[in-house]
Image (cartoon, rainbow, N blue to C red):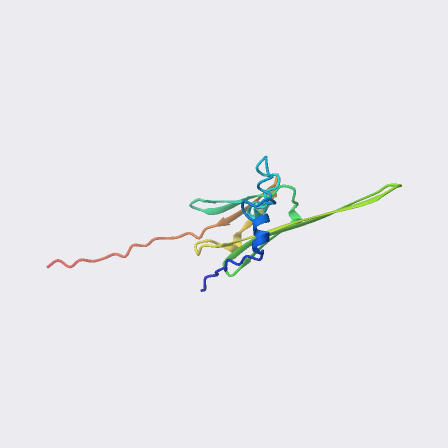
Length: 153
């Protein structure tokens, strides 16, 4: 197994970095008076996941409002769980003096390495009220203690 590394490469020239980089004049965070309006942090575009573990199962809860069941794809491949969604919308408005088209596209993908003590074949998924829920049962683990005989001398 190999570890992935990412080189820190900056594609902007020094002049561009001074304008758009952290602390630059055109950095959206400078003009963001409310905290979220112009935030360009890509981490906010991927839904957060709560993973709960009990004695019998793992539960994944992901808040993804505005989606429909058909938008999701959940796949398992060699112990890797991947949850992804894609939603495309197109709005058309035609009036006597003008025509307007608007497009929107939202997508995300999250992957998780599953532990060895789960049963991926028995996974269940449901989507209700903007929450995607996955239930992943655990294998029953039986702990057997070896009996050790001690000879009396």
